[in-house]
Length: 158
Image (cartoon, rainbow, N blue to C red; front, top):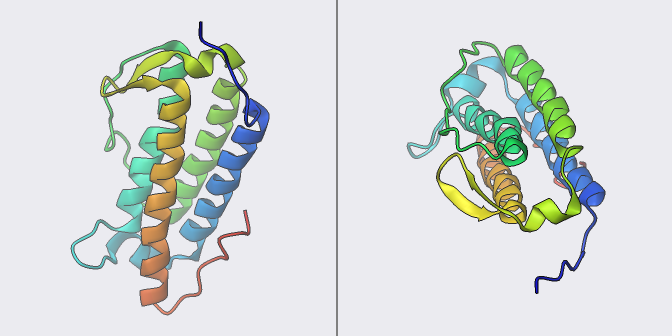
């Protein structure tokens, strides 16, 4: 018999994730327009490319989880050419995440979903993966900003 042990409520987890999203938004804002699209170190992708990945995971991931879809991952499905467009898309994705989140029940977090037809794990693990991936790429953005001589936002200012 599976017993659900709640360590953090769904509402607190969403708040935690949205705090990370808010901080990532601040990192996007901190980049000069040109550097957002062109700057990289050691062959890593630009922060705009990393942000495209995050946009392709967050709201589409939640949609896949809620609707139990195995839609393949589509990172380059949008043509965004300005930092402002990325910020607008980021805000739209945040609202979509909230909408899909409201459809989850506590029991759903233990259900296995094959996210993007590739990540066949319980919902909670897929959500934590999406959050961890964002933190990882935001860290790259911090390195880029520091290399550009720009003070990144404090990591606790979520």
